[in-house]
Length: 95
View 1 (spheres, rainbow, N blue to C red):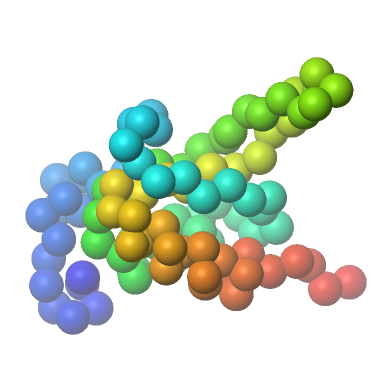
View 2 (cartoon, one colour):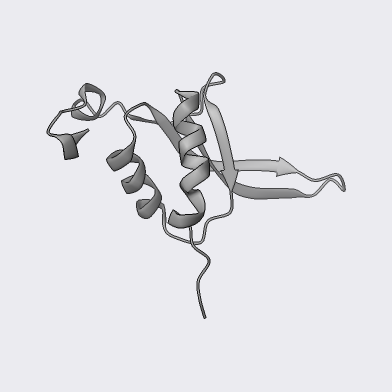
């Protein structure tokens, strides 16, 4: 991690974020209340493995299609860590 003065080879070559979600990645589904940059910046700063960030389309029992956000990680431990910290990153707007 760069905050520990160590360059991540995947980040140097632009290979950390993948454009599609491979089937072996562990998915975390959630509704977003912040912009994409907030989520991805936290991932780049605190985690080291490859990840996917994008839309996830799901069908309800009534046949309606809904869209939610998906972050998927190659390392299952990073998905667990992200899931635990998600509510502090993705805060509901306080009106």
